[in-house]
Image (cartoon, rainbow, N blue to C red; front, side, top):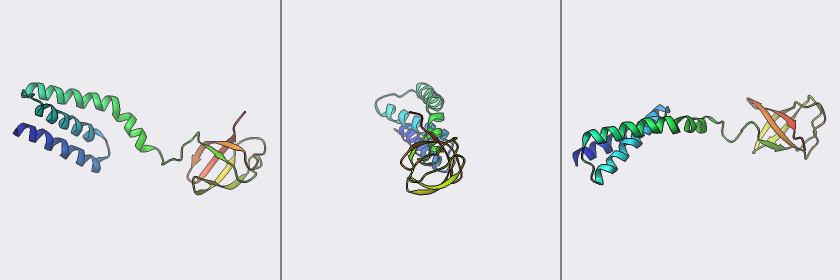
Amino acid sequence: MMATLVWAMVGLFSVLSELLSGSLFLLFIGLSALIVAGVRLLGLDNIILESLLFATLSIASIILFRKKALAGFRTKGHFRIDSKLRLDVDMPAGCTAIVHYQGTVWTAVNMGDHLLKAGDLVQIVKIEGVKLFLTSIQS
């Protein structure tokens, strides 16, 4: 029972420490330790198998899930390139205008070579600070 408590404490400490690190290594290590604690509660009582399970789960979860999880955290909110936007103003080719996108005021640049009309659905191809770079969506 003491070893189960140690695995659980290591798991909880690692998961909570992840809040300070942001690297996501400690999250997967902590979750692996918590799984080992759970397996011990189900009857496993062999330190070699526990260690092997812990190492396998930690390494596999880091390899399989860390990169995708980090990518999810690194997006800039809901402002993604390739998002679509319905214009509320006319935008001549190469010119800028003020547009509203997801409740925020942006400066938008028409990257195309023709007029974008109010009501047109356009595509965001690049974001730099508070500036959106737009092109028409070809139908």
